[in-house]
Image (cartoon, rainbow, N blue to C red; front, side, top):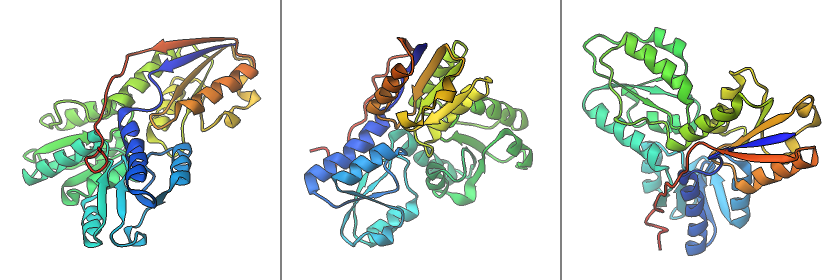
Length: 307
């Protein structure tokens, strides 16, 4: 069997920054370091940081007053920041810069009396945090059918923004229909879907038509990993979201000659390599990297740990 490895895959700059922030905080300040929500959606990463002394929490009430708190890459709501200040917590913000850009845009637009259509998954922590920046101005839509329920007046100023890890191709369809219904709707000068999400989706599409099955290495909680699997499934190809080599079952490879593989933006490369080794033990004897684009993005660490 042949294995086509999609590139880029795995860690993006925002994930590297978030993980490095926790590691550097532990090095500088010692444990415990509290982290609001999982720093990224990958159990391998989270378990590793737990073993180093990080404590992951959802409720700030469980954090002792005066402790150090890190905000995850997904961002937090202003309510959380206010509560942290009341509890005299030392805040370290690992929010991805691309997520922070959405928060800033929402605050700016709300002051200008725009109604903002937020395209994303209502229960995803990134959308929850962003929407709470200006809840009275926000309408969340998850799919193209939701547009039928929108009833803004022709005079209302409208703006749309997208969850950073949403499907590039699904957004294209939603935006097309939004513009048909509201021709004057505005958006950011550049897409709010992050570069890494876009690159991984387009890279996987490059090989999807050539393979018999696709494995996406990523956590079930990972939005961008789930979108990768969905993109392949919509091409009527079998696609499996796996979190380790143990999830690769022999039945997935029946009558398969060419395998495709990618990894979500929060997946460590060592986990991918173990999956490759498992496939080699199951009959893969040819491996080829297929690169869509080179990535050289770098985000500075928060000033509290940039020492």
